[in-house]
Image 1 (tube, helix red, strand yellow):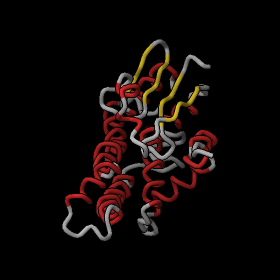
Image 2 (cartoon, one colour):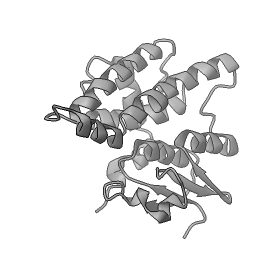
Image 3 (tube, rainbow, N blue to C red):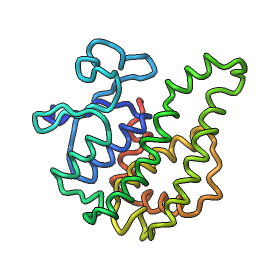
Length: 212
């Protein structure tokens, strides 16, 4: 077994973005599935790794790291991935673009959140799908507007994949899963097309990690 271990779940968008980063870094790792459907993340074994009971958890360089953005920053700094611009102003804008998904869309569209909203809803006939669509669509529309400040050449912020791309592609997977219309978002779709040809993104796709 490798000394680098990723505890993840195939459909977790946070895990998905870390898988992309690991692939960009050329890092081989052992994947250990934490089954979110069965509630394995709530068990003592996983909570001993992450008291939050969340994925991903990455064991690397003698460390045990949690929170996908923190993990990606560690990989960026230690493996020189250049996921963000050096210029402070450009860096802040690129981070804001990525965080518009990772901080604003993703948490509220976590399946556990949507399921709890279903339980509390007086009319749960179209939940959690309606919940997901309600938040994902305007969130991605805002992302499309923010992209106008950048030149897609062909990635969100430049000629190589950046942090925003790592956050966007997993969110697009979720959007399609919940049947969110993306046809009116040409900048976003152009970035997706570029990423779909990149080996690091292809190898990280959920269908490549789904249980047999």
